[in-house]
Length: 447
Image (cartoon, rainbow, N blue to C red; front, side):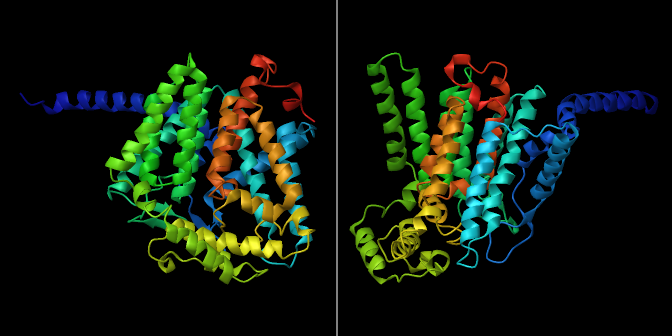
């Protein structure tokens, strides 16, 4: 029997009140987050990277993120001034020292090549997330929830992109069709793969109650869809390390290691995926012959023109791995040019940004652009981060593996999450610095 008009009104009021209560209950925590500016950077992990204002010959521009991070910087600065607290904790101090060394390298190379202070100052932007991470724990929120939400959201978007249902956000805006999926938080498959690695490391090595194999399988499948080989290698290594740490005996570890190793091999052999397709010519003889020919033909060029312009995918010979072909062009010019310079170039390098937008080799780029001094400073910073605990050390390890083939140390979301994780670890252990022997006092006390 249908409701009369008089009966509909109370039913409608009841439904509205019920929905309002439901929305209030689930929106309360996000609303509280919005009321705390120091936690605003958390939302930036869930937003795509879109340039509002682009710079010529640069992939990064002025973004919405920059306005939020500028507000946070002002809040921090005002807080330091009003509290008359001018001490800097050891980890941020080490980060600022790295920025100082990088800027000195830029100063030495002013007017030469593409060296730019903007590349050095990127690290300051990433470090803002350190204080946001500390504020997250101080406010009583759980890092695992943030990590799981990030993993779940990006995995869902990767699956939808791989099936062609949705597109993706690049620096220029929304693209309805993407070649390789890259999720929502990043705008390139390599960056998304590295971010998956760090999120996975933070979750499984930082939580005692996580369902490891479920998350390992989920992230592994997404990395196959993304097609990032360096990230997939890092994921396999992280999985083996986790299994080794939790193995009760060596025989058990050997069995599990064999299973972990056999599973991706079976996937590569039996199931069509992006990694297998991209790796068909990885170890071909033509690859090595092409490397020799390219090395002989590329000239020494202090402007590093071939780093940005050479090695186009469509120019790669048949039977040659495209990714390797691109890197051969870039790496060859960089190595030949640096070897032709005076030995003093090895001290401070050619300056951050000196070899262009992307080299696709983070460690090579770090050494060439910042020299021995800058590389040592960066390694000291990474060592300090690694000493905070297993989650941090495994995240640094994943970053290091990705840096073999990707400029991951310059990837915004990757480095931002690393410093965010560091902030949460420092804050959660601040009251017990000697717990489990993971920290020493000098890692936590202000300088």
